[in-house]
Structures are given as structure tokens and as C-alpha cells.
Length: 120
Image (cartoon, rainbow, N blue to C red; front, top):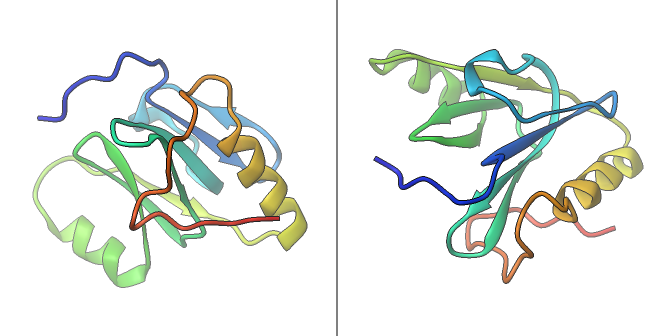
């Protein structure tokens, strides 16, 4: 089991219309995800972005492609899948910048080895 973080919310989802969501993973709106910012023990925050689908596993969000989603759904246990949306690059970069500077999360100390970087 993943240890609980001391920051709330443990994640925030940014959607294509500018809305955000930081409640229960099982109640998150399904369509239009652009980026998810999460608390990260190693680097303060972690961005999950630029994916077709986002799956909730082990108390974290992961960006996956079609076969990754199918594989996830084939595994036992409860499932939650969110769907990404394609938007113009400048808008996407603006939302990523907003997520990366979100004041609800600790300051980033580094980028994770498997974390995608988007710089505007």
C-alpha cells in the first residue's frame, strides 16, 4: 500500500475547458483530461500528461495508450479510466505550466526519470 502524503489533494486533474478536479478518483469527470499533477515523494510533484487514456492504479494516475488501457482493464480489481483530449499546442502548454506551478503542491525539486517534460 502506498503511504499517504501530507498534502491535499494528492492530485489535481486539469481539463480542456480550464476546469480542475481534485476529489475522489472514482468520481472524476471522464472526458477531456489534459494533465494531472500529483504529489510525489521524490520530487514534490509529478505531471502525468500527453496520453490517450489515464488509468488509476496503486493510488496513482498513469498515462497509457490503447493497449495499455486494454491490459489495465483485463486485470482484476476496480477500474477507473479517464480520456485525454487533443487541443492546440499553445493551450496545452499553458495548462501544463499551470499544473506545474499549482500552489496546492510542493515545489518541484527535479523531474522524474520517466516524467515527460513540456517547456513553452
